[in-house]
Image (cartoon, rainbow, N blue to C red; front, side, top):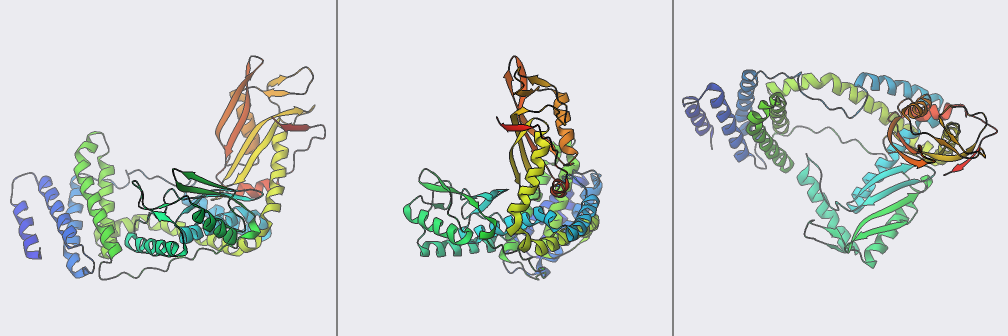
Length: 472
């Protein structure tokens, strides 16, 4: 289809029946169809420029006609704090780390876990997940999506990388077979188990303590490694991509996906508008057009508008990421060998707080992205002057203390925790019944601020010489 044919078809629609909006919608669909037809590897920007700019123009008209409001669209943040607060926090943190390097452990753990994830993906076409940093680093190597591609912008390149690595693994002796639901599975056999044990021993200094299987396939490896047994390779940032004047194979896949998404947005507008979500659908359409212009390197009005809208937020996020990267590169090699000792210090301080409430520190881990996972359980306690007053029931012999399951008690506990760990939030809790009353048996707490680890290191232990405890 050449430009003359395209113009002729657009003119025919413009001269036909229907309202201006209906005709505009038909023209947008024709332009999307035309783009899909010419989206082939090697297509030049000169061929794509005219229909892309026409698409941009017609979508602008549609957005104005339907009273699109860019400020009235849902934005879902990955973070509880805004960019300004996060930028201030990381700037303050960077200064604190110069004086107290061990407080940067959460950032070192993030870099360490990212390095393991990249290594496992590169070598085994699997993914490492569920990292828990404590006295050792625990994680899973999952093969549930073995040799699967999740890239949204480099699908063709990623698939070629995977195919090349599969050939290398099979040549090395791995037994890989297709299944009905997945293209590739790692067969549960002696050869694969031996190769995986050897790989883990060589890479992490430890064999997996458990190999999980299901119906003749290897599903996951469960690992527990010491920090000084794996030397992390910090992730290298990808170089800036120079815009190409022709479509690559990756570009063709992305372009066709955005064309399909744009069609879906147009098809769902009426139904979504009836329930008050029409503006959201128009935002999706506008985003698709922006992505089409990004892939083709033809930056028209919609692309420029959205870039202007996100420029400030993007700049702040880039500053945050640059500071985080500087921290990780400077502290990770030094801190990782010391994590076990530093963690033990933070754990001891946290234990003193937990014991003062009549609980036992059942579990405490740093997670992959600076979060902490804390589990408290009821303890059998003897204390005459508890530091935190809670309503509960004590046995006549004064040995067992049961904290009643009340909102007042839970609020008191969380206030005490938040006095040291401000970002702490109650994830879940368990209650049991004894002597006709419910008591709190377990509390699961999550945190979201990496700086809370520093606060735990700096807190004064809650001492009580007359306190003795053991876990329930």
